Image (cartoon, rainbow, N blue to C red; front, side, top):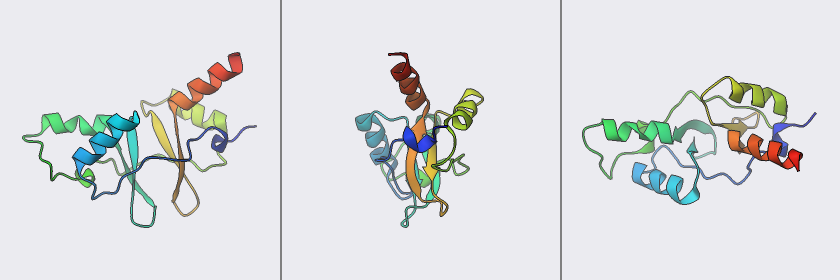
Length: 128
């Protein structure tokens, strides 16, 4: 049975908790992704910042150029290991509103990310 590492994206755009929120917004827009893993200085996953998290910017009083990712990111993040079975991750996506999950090694270091879109591409590829 195929493992999630067979479809995950390995070159992942990421940010640190200290990244300015305007810089994270720019990465989202220019990279055409919907969320960014947040990594500490040792590449350990400490959170994720998504488009949904950033919507709170409009609900706040004032958006300033000095606001940081750490003030908006989600810190409790569902992750999978690279050897997780495709069906396990697909079932997870089918039962949640989450659109992407980081893939981490045993030390909680980011090794990739997988999204619903990766599964849609796989389905399409197998229909050809």
